[in-house]
Amino acid sequence: AQSVTQLGSHVSVSEGALVLLRCNYSSSVPPYLFWYVQYPNQGLQLLLKYTSAATLVKGINGFEAEFKKSETSFHLTKPSAHMSDAAEYFCAVSDPEEGNNRLAFGKGNQVVVIP
Amino acid sequence: DTGVSQNPRHKITKRGQNVTFRCDPISEHNRLYWYRQTLGQGPEFLTYFQNEAQLEKSRLLSDRFSAERPKGSFSTLEIQRTEQGDSAMYLCASSLGTSGPSYEQYFGPGTRLTVT
Image (cartoon, rainbow over all chains, first blue to last red):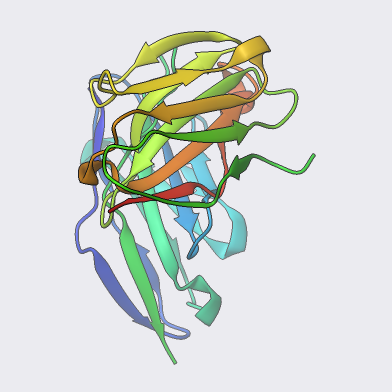
């Protein structure tokens, strides 16, 4: 079964500084990988996804992530944090060989942006 | 296209009562998923439908839980004899297909259940 690990439940970053959220996956097959963002009292919004094409994936709001098979990682970055980036971020994995496309999520990172 | 909607947004109930939640997916989406999210955790898969057929249920979905999707449109999730451990955010998602870009899941705002 697929799983992802996100370390550090709370991440503080200064406004204008680099945002780095780490995600490591476990999968017996080449996975599909996703990053979602959740604002308070809202559902999840897809930031970006990796589906076996380009390993460097660009998403919305200036975020990008790089798939590294050798490190089983899919870390999320943004060069310069903005106050509006304060939210909870989830990494998720699915098995493209399964028919259900269900997502397995990590525990999430609560990002706090310090002015 | 107004996205995935869920009702109610909040539900407070007493232990032992039955509750029902509704999810309206994006109109042309044939797949519908239910997830549960507890405090400090990521969402966990509960079940999914392809059109009106319920194709998979997680072991998290005890006998007190039942989900339906009549006519392949909206879906309901019912919890009977609620317990305090059922308190969570229940998220619904829908997708258009099973492969390629169309498999992307779009999430609703969720229904927050509090069992007292």
